[in-house]
Image (cartoon, rainbow, N blue to C red; front, side, top):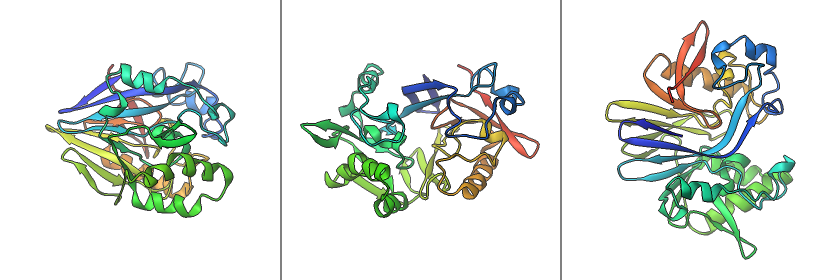
Length: 283
């Protein structure tokens, strides 16, 4: 799936798609509540109120850069809390190449945050060693995000994620640690959006008079636009994440800004009473 924002092209490359089975991440999102937001159907939920979500990477092509935003789960990883995320042998790199983006064509990898489903393909296993997947790329991490997980990855699953998907990038000298409001290139500026994780960032795209927003995990699903207080079980600071949602959605609502989520497809944010709704972009 591809979208255009001025002279910038964004391509979604999917690792996993799910329908339902999402209550572990959004426990308040019951089917009856989802059915009360009919604008979610059919693009973001089924007729019976089950959520549609994906784990994917977004390849952002500007006139001068080829950037992978977030890298999914990865293969061969261990000590993940979700059993099916362990020792995966998925075709993601083949799919990425088939979409026109062989790994050695990528010049930048940008992680909105350093959670398990956004860093996995940072590395791959070669001769029992974790090495950078994108051999010609610089990896961009928020400096606050990196510092937090460097100092707080004490639980076994967090330690494993940092050890196999983040630390090898640092060791290889491929990482650039940047401020949360950094300008990445002419078209892309980071927006600090803490709450889901301490140093989470989103991407604001401006090109040829058009705008886009890559939200990362500010919201895992558009239902959180209608229910700003529905924080994810993975949010490090649920109150802050709710505040961030309101502030970010208020900034971009009711404008021709193409918004793409870390786990959902593109649309436009509209105000709806004291909250918002998300209208799917034409395909």
